[in-house]
Figure (cartoon, rainbow, N blue to C red):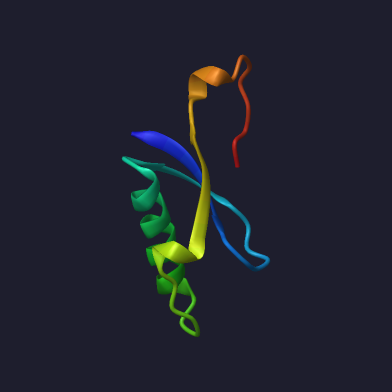
Length: 66
């Protein structure tokens, strides 16, 4: 599993930190979450971008990711 920061490609939405097997799964998880809570729009994984995968070993101090 990897850690990804997933953001919508356009719009004022905040990013979400996701643990997933790969980048596409991370985007799908967030798209599914948005589709359950935002009934006026339909999101697909291609509407999102990611930064990551984030390797937690790259942080030398404890930190808040999201």
